[in-house]
Image (cartoon, rainbow, N blue to C red; front, top):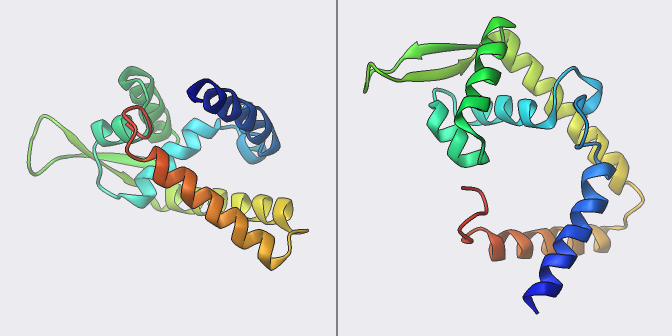
Length: 147
């Protein structure tokens, strides 16, 4: 049964990732990858977080994350400030420009997904939400999911 689950998850990913254009380096027509925009969103969601939080939450290599953070800082989208709790670490914040850019990504993503599900009737939307909730509930405690 687990082999069937693995196959079905892979099959879903093969459908879903290209459907939302998540495989390329130009998320929603931008110059950024889905990973880079997801990092901005995580900072948007948890202002003042530390890189270790982002790396753990998104399961991203710390050196790769560090390069992205430095690049986004250089582009004026975020700032790092010395942590009040530990002067050896930094709190990460979006600048006004970074917040605006992230909100633009959120709006474009919502629009894109809205267009994909536009033909669905209310009952189909409910089924979709229920199915996504079930997947999340099942996988949220798995060792590799979200860590």
